[in-house]
Length: 457
Image (cartoon, rainbow, N blue to C red; front, side):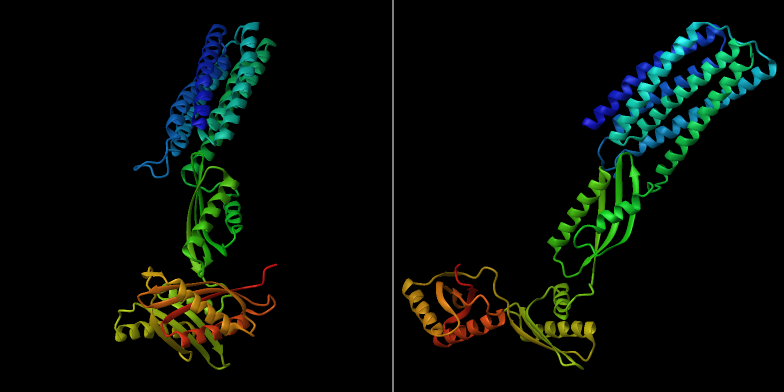
């Protein structure tokens, strides 16, 4: 809203100033018979028309995207700038024709007084101020229409200097000075139109801004998790930079991690460009440092399978893979076996037909199994057994023992401590031995979950 208010306010002020200066120059030009001054007045009149168009367009171009304009309304600024360019060329052509006619016929020079010089000096000061104000507003808001308007007024300053030079030449007795100055104004208008047309057409044909591709690519590549940028396209719609990219990300990343990469990429391009709309397409790819286990987990994930306890052994000439596959406990064996066979075939397609794959099928644990806390006496009995099984070993300080009764049997959770320098595999071996003893002693225990931690500091 602030951007729109800034653009419309500057444009509205320019309308009143343009109208006043154009009328003053036209009246003085007619009074003294100066083609150069009349030409400059006509130029200012075109600027007035352009400013009115700009004022109207910027009120529409900042509207958000809708069902019919998915990329917003920013291109209206480019279209308006193109229309103003056409008016400038019509004006320049008319002035050149009249200048040539006066030079050929030897039209008498205008009558010289202080009035036209005063008007032109005021015009130079006003246009210089307006050009700076519009240029600043265009830079802050990214408005192409305001930038074109600022260029108009900057050219008016040069045109006024050319008219002053022509009037001085006429005052010195060079009858052709005024017509020559008018021709110079026409040339300036034509050059201005050429510059505007080039910039506007490039925007309308979606030419990427200079250096934008490299800048956007560098910004996206700087995001952690982006392996590379496969394709990137940039175009401007009004003040908004639209970026469309296909980026490579590790295929082992979960969806929420990929979404985080997208958010960080959006923040990176906004930092680089300001108002930005990023379309980010993530392509999962295999990294060079992917392990065999990573690749197997990707295969299972892509098939929607729950696997765990993946072990891989490399025998040199042969790769041995063992996997625990969880399936619905109510699934019939033939259906479960087919799921396991499909997983094996997919792994063999990835690593070669000679890979040896063994899949252990087990029932998938229900997501929310019904259960209640066991009686305190039962908890004390199992806790005492755990302490007994751990006595004299590497595992000690059995604590926080919990027992729950479920439809499938008892579930036991406990915490314990081990030496901080002990390796994870050694801790697992010792804890696993305690768990096996507990299940043998208490057949109703379905599962034991232990949490090993170093001693308190």
